[in-house]
Length: 491
Ligand code: PFF
Image (cartoon, rainbow, N blue to C red; front, side, top):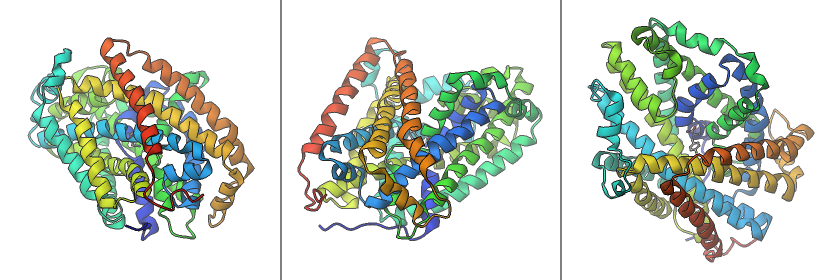
């Protein structure tokens, strides 16, 4: 097989795929809680600062590197210095492991899409989620019991991801993003529009409009804003770099980065207005204090929202399915993006076709995801999430910052970015990437490591030891395996 390079057939395909990669679970269920717990309206200040300082700045590095080299992350780092290839495989392996549990959460959501048509979660959504969906148990023996519904839904999501990723770029990722993203926007507009008409909506959305200025003096609030941007824009996950490497000559990189970053943030802020309004309605009808409703993650989507739909009347039969479909679409476009960077590095090094790489990666991924379809699955998922996001991924991003800011000839990137863009970058951006960004990420990482240490029970420790060993061994193996592509080692 010879090396063939994919290329986006339109600018909109690239931009929509990029927005699809960014808009995901993090925007829908993580952001409202982060916003609420960090000062409401005043959080917008650190948030906007983070978009520029961290988000757009780092996306620009990824775009410039991907576009300049037109190679995969592993080969780019090898080209910069032979010793750096293991860092690439480390990042890619972290991204792959994140995908294995992200798929599971999207799978839970698929179950809720089906349930939402009949409100199949019954009168007690919290018990239903724990007992009927997860079949959660605290006992370690739970790892030997498979939960069939979750297994099937995980399989379906892996199958969908495989089906999209194996296809040629524009027929797969490009086409799916061009269909799902507009649909997602229409659904979110419908949900937000409806939610604003609900009684009590103002109890919710005024929370966003009521700033707590004292929060701005709190370093944790700033770190929360940085963390949200890292997660939400999928920074450092080889996605932007991979997608930008498929761009044709003459692309306006800086302009594209600004569009993507603002679309992603616009989506999460707009969506939060709907979520807050719906929670305001719940506070009014049930008397449950607002702060008890704004939870994060699966608690918000699979417990609080079903509770809300139970109190909503006939409209909930439309709004419920729309809500869970939004999560499904946002999740799928993120899963395919997470996989693309991983597949590209493997197929480029070992000269394996796109189809075969996607097949192998998805099969292995599905096998790992089976752990999350056991009685102990949700517990293990929590440990994976905490360890990989708080510790491993941030470490990878920190290394990428240092490599591109300090080891690589940085001025080349400025040249690449300014070549065709209307918006230009200069010295300020260089200072941000070389000094400010690594410092911010370092503090975020320290805070992340500290948070991760909350998991101290024997099971979590065992999982973290296994993950750490795997994160050392696999990058070494993938680096040492000889490339089949005879151009791989051309520097
Ligand atoms: N940015 C996407 C989201 O907000 O869900 C995708 C993503 C981010 C996936 C971070 C996984 C992750 F750890």
